[in-house]
Length: 543
Image (cartoon, rainbow, N blue to C red; front, side):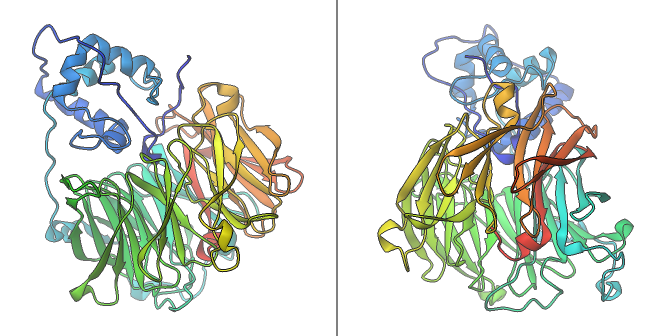
C-alpha cells in the first residue's frame, strides 16, 4: 500500500513503529559525533517527540527505546523512516534527506537525553512585556471589524496571521515563536464577567518551544504582540479563566501546567503532572495534551495524556489549589464542550473512546466506544432529527465520522450512545459546523492518495449522507486541512497546507459559500496555515 506523503507533527498524528517480529541487530554499536547528536536531537524534537515522547517511552506512537530499536537495526529503521508503516506512521523521504534519515535512525538507537527542568524563577526571567497594560487602548485603534477577524496559525513560519473576515485581507503577521499549536481567547462565561477586557479581544498562543504570547486585537497591527513568557521547553495548549484573570499553559516537557497573570503574563504557579496512571503505573513523562476553561465553573480542565486523567483545576484560590483527578482512559488528546457547556467530550485515542466529563459534578459521566484513534480537534455539535443534540468526531485511523447523542436532560435515551456513523473516503483530523449551516464539514488529511487528502467532504445534517466532495487543491505536495466558519455562518474557510514549506509563504486559505458550497476566494501569502479561529465564534462557544 502506498504510504502517505503528509506530515503534521504539531497536531499529534499517530506515528507508530512496529517493534515486534524482527530479529535483526546492528553490526556495530551505534554512535554519533557531538554535532550530529545535537542535529538529530533537534530533528527528533521537531518531528517525532509529539507522538513518541521526549524520553521516547511512547504514547500515541510506540516506544523508541534502544532495547527495541537496536533489535530492528540501522537498515530496517531507515526503511521505516523512509517508507512509513501500515501501522500509521507516515513516510519521511520528502521531509528528511537520506543522510538525515540515516542520522535519525542512529539517534533512536542511543539512550535518550533527559532535558532539564524549568523553574518558576527561570520562567520569570523569560517573561517580556512589549506594551504595558496601562497603555492598552480603550477602544480599537484600526477601525476594522475585529469580531470577524480570523486568527490563523502559520506553523512553519513561527507566526500568527490576523485576517479580516469581511474583506479577506491579511491585517498582519505576528511573530509568536516556533510551531504554534493552539491559540485561544478569553471567552464569554455564564457565571463570571471578565475583568481584563471584552471577551475575544485578547488571544494567547502556545508554541512547541513553550513560548506563550499575548495578542491584543485592539492595537494597531504593528503593536498587537503585547507580552510573552516561556513556560516550558515543549508545550501544546493554553486557556483563559472565565474571569479573565488567569491564563494557563500545559507542558509536554517538563510535564507540568503553569498558571500566569492574564494581564501581565507573569508566571504565578507551577504544578507537576507526573503521577500514577489509570493502570496503577507511575509515569514520569505525563504530558499535558490539552487545556480548556469550563464555561459554567471557575475551573480549568487539564488533560494529562499518559495518565488517562482529566484534572479539573479550581482557580478560585491559587494558594490552596483544588484539583479533582478524574480517571478515564489513555491517551487523552483534544476535545470540546456540549452546547450547554456542562459536559466535556475528549478523545482517548489509544483506547478508541470519547470520554465525557461532567464539569458540574466534577466526575466521569461516560465513555463511548468509537472508531480507531478519534481526533475531534475543536469538534462539532448539531441537532439530529432522531437523536436530538449530537456531537461528532473523525478519526486518525479510519475514514469514519462517529456521531453520538449529548443531551442527557431532554434526550436521555440517546445520551452518550452512538447515534450513527458516516463512512468517508479517508481518515482525517478536523470536523466543523455552525448552527446556521445545514452541513458538517470534515477533512481527510491522513489518506495516502493526494486526490483524497486534498479534498473536503460535506455531510448533510438532515440526510446524514455526504452531499459533496470538494477538491480544495491539486498542487503537488499540498493537502486540505481544518475548517472554520465566519461570524454569521455564511462562509467556510479551509487551509491548504504544504508539508515542506520550510518557511515559504506558499500556503493559502480557500473561502467557500456555506450554502452553495462554491468557492469565493483564495487568500494567499501564508506559510503552512493550520488552525484558524474566528474571534466571535470562539469567544461565544459557537461550534
